[in-house]
Image 1 (tube, rainbow, N blue to C red):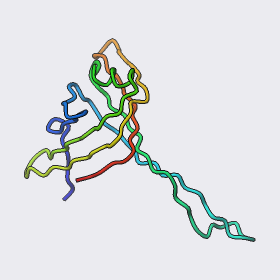
Image 2 (cartoon, one colour; image 1 turned 90 degrees about the horizontal axis):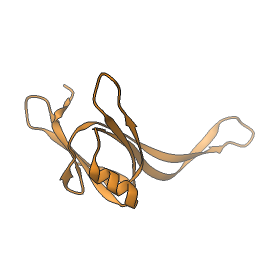
Image 3 (spheres, rainbow, N blue to C red; image 1 turned 135 degrees about the vertical axis):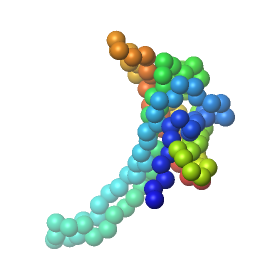
Length: 129
């Protein structure tokens, strides 16, 4: 049976402080890659892997003053996501994003909802516990 995490029970910490109003977190691990070509063929014979980074986004209802300050100061921080299951056991998964920087932000407000700010971030590595 799959493990289903609940946004209502999960939490996000920035340098140990809870982020209020979190709506979503999304991330992807990006690894540089170069194909090694076979001589006289249109196929590759191997792959060389390079730099690996993490790129992500946090969507916060209204705004997060701490993330705004980190963007302005170009400050480094650690982001920890504590993911918890919806029902059943108290299984958790902790994701730690090391050496993060806020790369940018965008703001959105529509007539039928409240404001939301999207913070784009990068991290040196992701550790799963």
